[in-house]
Length: 439
Image (cartoon, rainbow, N blue to C red):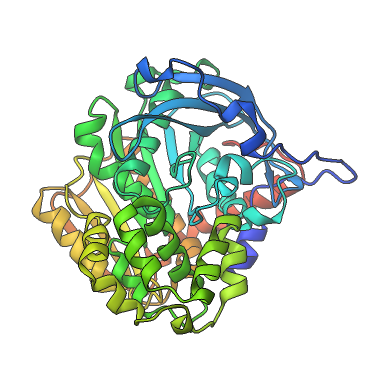
């Protein structure tokens, strides 16, 4: 945890002493987020509105790269038109000789509060609620250092339906469709080389994008997909009560209530008065506060039956089954990394996902990290994921079939330690006011 906090605090930020940053208007009061009349008749990925924005790490430290927000048309779980936002970022400097790639980076939003969306959390002056997303700007800066443009979608949509299946994938892919046609990024349209990356809740959203892409957005030039600890099966939350991650159970209940009306009625019938209050509180807080206020809490007084038993009730179980990854195989190569001793994501659930992808013909590189826990692998696993993505984007062939290895640490992979050192040394320059981009 200390390593994670240190690395996240050194996110790609540029300190500007004495500068005053205005607090952004909440999304609920910001007309930019409202879809214009008639948007339903546009194609998925159509840009409906755009604006330049100032980004920051930890709300107050400006992020020295050009950025815009794009409101675009996408699709919800039921197949209906929906509008959401992506934040697109352009690194300093000329495009690479072969053209500028695009990375779609999915953050771990993990909140049903729409005000916790990355388009809000990453903006200058947004406040501490978005601490986790602001920390992930470290990894976004790593991608910008490669010369890649980056799209960071509000993959949970305007209602922050983080537990919905497929919908986060549609949002991410339509964010890519919007980004490749946005002229200021200087991309090559549908010829643009594209990578997808996310960790934890962002890994789950990336997994949905990977699975729906062959049928939903086959025209996109997806060259590689990196997924870290993606929670492929929600039953993993069953054992979290009383742990540091106890708040994730409450998020899981709140999310299921938002996405599935039938499951909501079943869950409500088994919540105690204290449980209803605790779950309702999830609507007004982001992940960092949820974890901090519920750490090591015993959630059993919130339910009339054990959490695991609630998840097995037929209506709830049907909803849970629909939210599991592994129902379709990605067509692009996948790099998947997870901790053998991860406290949130049981390694057996990730093993099962890898088996499903391999059986479906997806080339998979899978690293089972013995040393890292959930909060540390986001940092230590990033260099090898970044190197792998760079090779795929540069059209270095991936290994055929499935390459599964249990390793002491992914930092032992060839080039990973060097990438870890070089990208984090660059962060020192960024903190001193340097531009974000390749040398």
